[in-house]
Length: 352
Image (cartoon, rainbow, N blue to C red; front, side, top):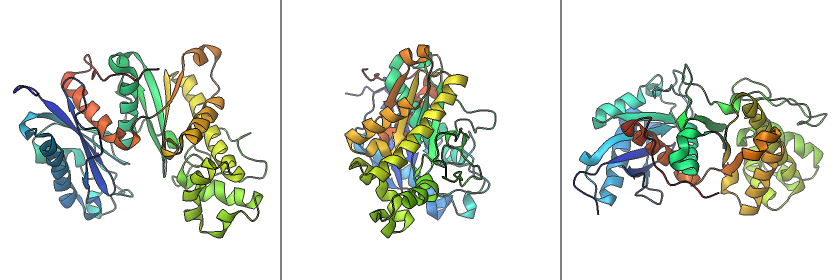
């Protein structure tokens, strides 16, 4: 039973179609064990989306019979690009295309609406923070980690000492746009992959749904002449590749092995400039059949060239509770802001 002086923080995961809300108490216990979603309305602009976030917060509090006065802080995560302070890109973004979003101070506007502190992270950083704190619990501040989230693009984050590494301009942890060596990854006649950001040969150009659509699938269909995925549009075929991989289709496995190799090379770079304790993997492969995601994680580890000393201590793991990881990571950041850096959120760690 809650006591009169107890307090909570709320995590809000703001997506293209839905807001997911969760609640974390001062003892590090999540009070919600499922998705609690409401419409996000982001395509209608900030004048509609901000009240929708307030509604998401009030909805989850009502379900738990917690008054808004018990909330000390709110964590907010959104897809990027945005600054570390939650100011949306001056050029907009996929989910924030209305002109009103361009350069909009999302965090500040929500904080003003709620009259509460709001702590902002992009969705990749929030998921990375949740994975880190869930794995290490009260020892989070003694460890570092990198999380790669494979989706339409390649998101993720870098955690040092239990905290998100943001960088001078708030652009640290853009793992998808790290350029990696292509020699030995591509076939001799395979074109150099291009990324929508303008780079060639970055991780996202291979390890993402967009990378499959634009780069990998068009090439491998020429090597597997007559494959049934060649009978549908590239967009549709790319979304079906994972199910084919789960069924051990040779072409799909070639595609996913190249993705695993790209992620392994990203980890190799991280091992040499950062030397993290843990390498987390999230995204669509986490939502795949267990045998396939374990195969894929093993392939990522196989292609991560660590030194012997690093191999002995490194952890390779999947991001837990991926559909709830964003909101939960946002809540962790909010709790951390209340408790201070010297008192990390005491989440229960995962047993190894």
